[in-house]
Length: 200
Image 1 (cartoon, one colour):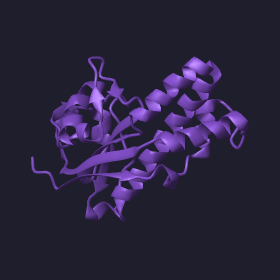
Image 2 (tube, rainbow, N blue to C red; image 1 turned 90 degrees about the vertical axis):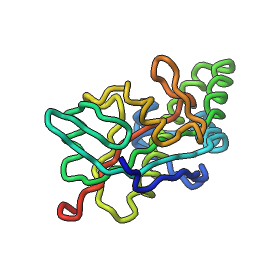
Image 3 (cartoon, rainbow, N blue to C red; image 1 turned 90 degrees about the horizontal axis):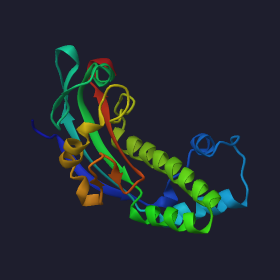
């Protein structure tokens, strides 16, 4: 399958706005609630994160019985197939906050489990906000479907190795262990379908 476009990049952490809803959900507090520990956690995450991404734009081929081909192998997923209906191409991408965030969380664990929880939760929220920023960057005026990640619905995690190889995620420091968990921890992969002209 021919790749239509491929690339990688970095967005300064200071330019990413953390979604307050996502942060509140991760922390288990009311939206807008803050205190000194949360403010400090946000500062630490923004100062530490190195927000890198890599992607490819690939044709989409959907077959019968949930069969999908989006540039990193053929597999069966009824949920992804439904998500990609009326799409002729898709962005496949990976994002990471970098290994510095892993080290920050580990340091906080030694200091205080409460602080570790705050930094861990805020890092997860920040990773989602970074993913939103990359999502917007790749769309560039195109009408796209909501992004869909391995582990959602019936799209299995065992597609991660092929996906990461296809987008060359090692170039931004992402690796995969035997349990199919990514390192650095705050890394996300996704597929985002681009609707064809007749369905925009």
